[in-house]
Length: 272
Ligand code: SF4
Image 1: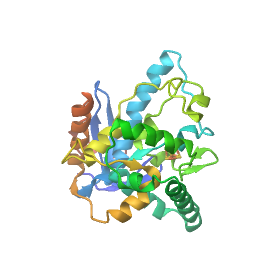
Image 2: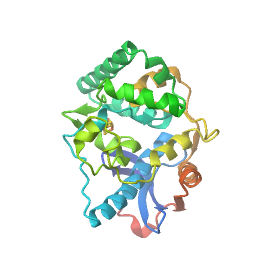
Image 3: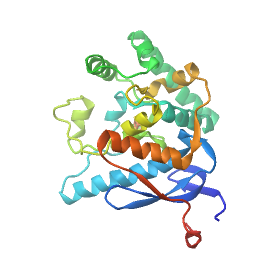
């Protein structure tokens, strides 16, 4: 039996044992899974590794077609859009914020407060912070109104993501091949994105597993307010169960599956 140890998944340090997860198409990734009963956000480092592998496949296929991704550091065009997250990512982001050095934390918290003030002024803060799914007739004008306020994500610094390894799944799925000017102006018809698995929606569905049609999403700028309004402790399950729930959400919503194959890796892989 391997002993638990700290593994690094991009920048996030995770206590856990390595496990193999099989991706649709036969590929597999090795990820750290925490032991015992854990909240869903504890498996986010594993899900991020999984999603990175999925997105890499999409990017490789695009490169083979000669289609270059235009997203790069220094372009924060999409970071002024409504970035939907759910309770799982809200908790992870709040913890990340708490772990930041005091001065940096103060700067980021000030940006959250500024975003809240702007949205209050625009009269849409309470609706956004309440979460819940919106009908398309409400969602479209809300998202466009939000974008036209030009509120940067609190984690955007020098037009680059300051939490790149820990960014939400939806930020990983935004793979654009059209000129960035179209993203900056939200010219939907001109924005060409690669078709990527909607892992962020699967995560939202996983969050609302008891009622997958009524899961809660809200903008990233409202995560601190969301947690103030929902102080209850999150549900606990084993990491394997959470991964299975995520795989089931992918399958039900998109016909894709993420299957938990084995845990842990054999002793021979101790050096991983
Ligand atoms: S988390 Fe990072 S990538 Fe996502 S919107 Fe914020 S700054 Fe942009």
